[in-house]
Image (cartoon, rainbow, N blue to C red; front, side, top):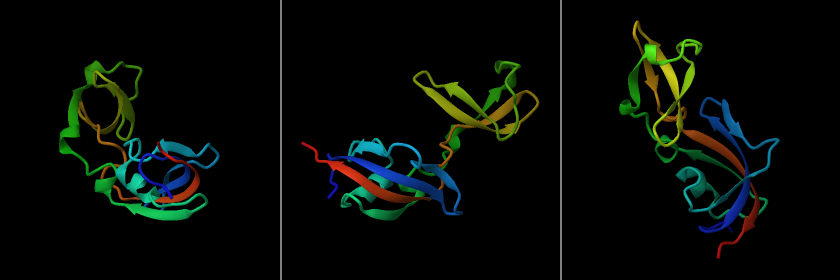
Length: 142
């Protein structure tokens, strides 16, 4: 049975409550990670604990155990003049910004005369997530 410290491989399909799919391992190698390492969201990690090889399971992960609720501080204005002219600026589009450590995707939520309003929240923030899981293998931890 899966426990913290084990390295596992799992196939998964992720859907929102409206049934739309946001991610899947279908057609790819299964996701491999060490349980308890924080490599995946808490609710996903909690969902695999106790599974055995070959087990299938569906889990619902509330937003707070997934990507959290949207944070108002992650919505900000940015000067349009600072964006190269060849980059399209339209509501719903995305840009990639660098926070000094890594690239962060941001969504354009409003276009004004001199500024655009950007949302740097994770695209799945505020969403409850559903995963269909199939445990492929367990490599016991030390």
